[in-house]
Length: 253
Image 1 (tube, rainbow, N blue to C red):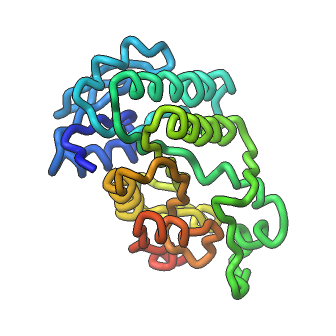
Image 2 (image 1 turned 120 degrees about the vertical axis):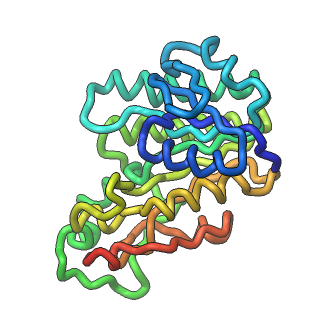
């Protein structure tokens, strides 16, 4: 799939910024978000405010990397505006503009509810826990267990992507992103199980952007190959060729 012109939403954030700057080495990259991104043509738009303001930024764009969104401990209405209304506005604008592929951030937190139960609870909190063989594994086909409005709102992105793929023949790849940190190291034992290095999240986004054009819809987990990892990576390997290069073990976890 040709990707000569790429729009990145959320490029003022960590993951969007990493991705946009990497792709700018080979592609014409522009940004869309609520603040200016130095060095890049930026459309100052809140995607939660409507479709019309988004459309001009999509002129000639073939691929959108959608990393914008609300996260953290904020009112539910904030998540709904950014991650539900905003995702719809962006996807609909992409449909109208003829965008061929959207690579969208979901979150691994859509299955974080499993961590309330054993043995996952001990896996992420007990430093002495020994991973059984075969390892504990939550796959894309496992029932979701969101535990807050943020992860609920990200499930909307996945469902919206499936609908746009099937009804409008667009290619939508949703990445259930692990814990990506500014300093590129896990912050604690729990995060070490779901940690995703800068190098690994960039590899995943790159694999998704360059996936075959006939891949119309996919959901994949993205994290590093951590000793206490319980999110399945075989699906991403088989589908996209994603093989993580890093591990929390290299940081003492």
